[in-house]
Image (tube, rainbow, N blue to C red; front, side, top):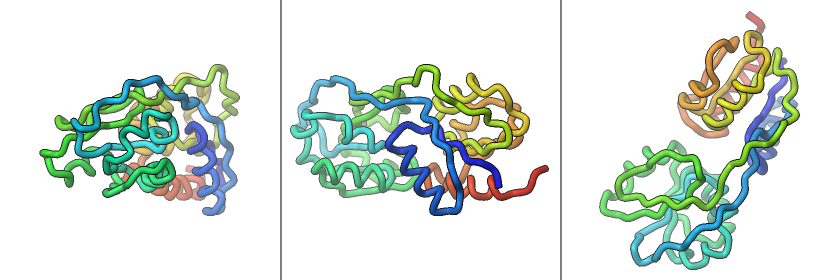
Length: 217
């Protein structure tokens, strides 16, 4: 059984670790980034039909400005994001388990959405206006262990790129990325580099179990 290493920021890292333990793994956690709030100006809520949330970090770190938007319904990517939105007093009307693009494909094109987002993000669609409410800041000198023989879970393209910078050994390390973009950012040379069909933590950990349990080549 291979050791699992989780790189995502807290509190997500601890949630992933808890899920991994429930699947019979004993993970190590080494966040490469830390989440911090960003000061932002609250847009006129009358200009929007709903809020788009693609990460639980948005409602956690949006601060007091969120109160002015609390009457807007929420379209959320992922159940963890939906739970964080409800905990912040928001009304979630739609939850998608894929990415933002697939969720928005089911949303009427005439709806104007305000995306409370992180500093590094994609562009979900033409009827979406984004405002940065949090950022992921690189941890200086993270205590990254020797990844030789491990399975490393990569939850974002930035984490993949940082892993590629920091890891000294690749040929005997298996990388499980949450998406193809995160896998490509991790670079070449790993023993295996794979990602699940669905970009969710649960799908990623299901892949991780297979990689941890599969025999050596």
